[in-house]
Every structure is written in C-alpha cells, then in structure tokens.
Length: 153
Image 1: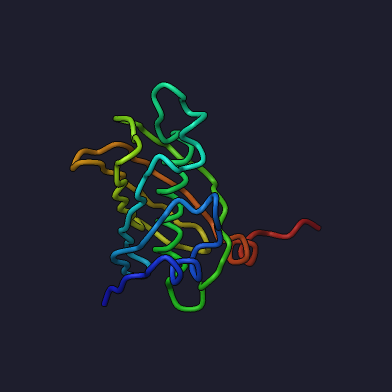
Image 2: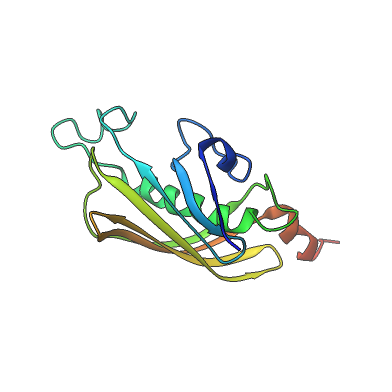
C-alpha cells in the first residue's frame, strides 16, 4: 500500500537538506518499487541567477540529483532503511528540454532491482507533460554493500 510524504516527512528518508534537497514533496511511494513527486521551480532558486542570467534554467546535474533523490526515497522507505545514506555508482542521463523558472518538475523513479545494497533504477522528469530528463541509475547504501564486499587480507 503506497503513501505520500510531505516536505518534512521526506527528510526522514532523504539525507540532503537545503540548498541541495531537490524534492519538494513525494506524492506517492511504494517502498522498494517506486516513488513519485515534484519540485516546484521559482525565480528564487539559488542557481537561476547564475545559470544563466539571460536564460535561467535548472542545471542538468541538479535535474539528475532530483531524480537520484527520488530513487533514494523509493529505497529508504523500505523497512529498516530510514535515514540511510546513499552513494552514486553510475548514472546514464539524457536531457530533452530545459527546465525553467515557473516549471514543476514531476519526478517518477522506479526500482528495477535491489540486491546486497545496490539499486538499479530509472527515473523520468516531466514538465508540462513532456519528458525533460531521464536517467538509468546505479546507487548504493554503503553500509549494506560493505557487508558483502570481500575484505582485504
């Protein structure tokens, strides 16, 4: 049974904080399966004045970060993983259109597999019903992965 997380609740499952928290709300999460939510973008975002002054848009690295944070929520809402720190292992990302002030970036993240602390997943970011960005991601919870990593003699 899925549930939602408001701005305060999502911080129990996502270790990033302002100014690097790239999600405003999680509208639906099914632990270990998927998470969906959004980021409202206003002219007040810290990166718009410098990226770029005459044509502000959300940097691609931050779009990727938003998708990775949503995938993190899909993982850390599983039993016993609340507050776990994740690390990126590999990302393949594609940017299709600019994300600009006034947009709402709708983010959907899906867990394709979850084994031994490694998550293979994918995410999509939409604005105005169109795909703005998409990514295939490999992220880990190091505390779990380390239990399965052979120790050096």
